[in-house]
Image (tube, rainbow, N blue to C red; front, side):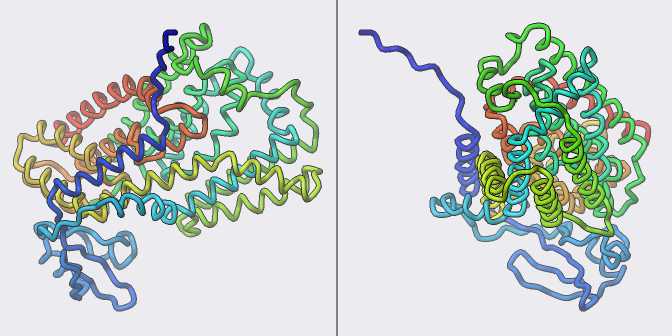
Length: 505
């Protein structure tokens, strides 16, 4: 009897991450370890602290003369006012250090430490899952989705346009990214009801956030902190970034709309068509939707207000909200929804726990993704990669220089996916290179933003695998969907940088 051939199945997010984790560990054996000295400001002693690659800490006066001596082109007020609140790399201080290869034990422990390191995000995900579980159980979501579907009937494309532009606005102003995790369980059923596939929903949310953060205007976690590290105002180059944001968002929306139209007309053209039945079983409404009663309207309004309050809290620098505050906010919202739902205490708790349990895989993916960063950080190779690139591109023709700078930040963005982390490490090293080729430093900020933004489209160490885990879509299908758009945006970014260079020379 002839054996049936097994069809190849692309591995899950966990397998992809563990493969990348092993490769990252291998790099710590191959790439020499090294580090820059780091400068930080100690507010309690009003002194600078310089930490050498060997770990030795030396105090220096917190004066402009000290910054000039260390060749850090910045104002002392940026440190004393708290605009720069993380250690920054000191140019010209790179040293090789003892190799720190990350072996088998480190690989085994890194996912555990990664989960510990991202516990704030994971708990946020669980609370969101719990609320979604309750809302699904009582039928509030089904009622709201049915109502929204009737309103947008014949104009479903407006969902794509509205959501992409709205989230891009959040990304460019205050770095809306991780917070969007909460939106997928809510909006996927809406897009399915509009006869789109799940990739359309993911693209509208994830690419809205990615384009917004990539072309940041006043985002404090990238544009502002990067400009501060370069010793310039974040308003330098702002007009170029605003123009890039508008055009980049339009390119993205047109790309998503074109794919969405194709899927709507012929569902078999969907990249995830083979998963259609499974996805609809997980997200689509079961049976006839209940009427949108006054109780449901109040509950859904409360849920919406929770998001508005979250956005206000995160975007307001005076409040300084992050995941603990956001999680507390949604926990209060969950309790209020529990009272309004009419469910008994036991039923509410059971449904809440059921909803939270459905996002366990998402939470673990977030932790495992962080483990890759931990291996690279502990292996002390990120500074070596930065030093290599900074030496390689110094003194080039300005046009070649800025295109290569974009590529450098794409590579660095994989190893250091944190926008603020990459800024304080790389910008003090890269910004002086612009001086050497006769370019203003704001061009470096644009290259940094575009580079880390581009790699965020696909990097396994970012949010994309956690996003895909929410809807049971494999990484290869996302790559098939996004790679053409990534190519368009990469070309557009390079063109914008060349325009910025030649208008400033």
